[in-house]
Length: 113
Length: 117
Image (cartoon, chains in turn purple, blue):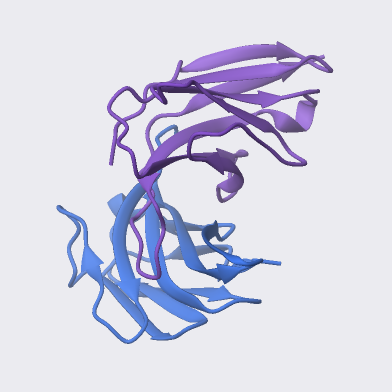
């Protein structure tokens, strides 16, 4: 699976949009971009994933560049409860016995009031 | 939907004893389960992958005789830390992949905090 690069930490004001970047320049054609987050002392929580089109769900939006070498996770209105470590992971398509999720260092997002 | 539970949520044991951690997929069948370990201020490290009814595949550097994994059914996997030592103290997180909500995805349990004294 392709490697990802994320900034180690970011701050965001409460109520503002949080934009978390991720570089995955070696991504291959069948690899998806996944985002998970981990709030302190809890298991990771799935946020969103995409292949090449932008995606949106109730939690966030995922913007993938046309060349797919980078992406941005957008939390439209960050709250204090969004403070967490955010992981960007690239993985090939999941099948019945699909590939594993390998976590990097992630980005610590601190939402401040 | 797609809930994964772990039991216990925390455990303290004495050095040299064994500890079993259970991981259950509550509302879907998990064809594959994963076990991760996380030390303070570090990321999750994958320990092993197991498919139902098959032997687990361990990542490099993980001792299979020390970390026994059993995936006996499509909803239950167990991790047994044998002859635990203080350096095994960590946050253990299981993850289950299966068909939930119309797609195959991977969901995580809440984690188990193990402290070995």
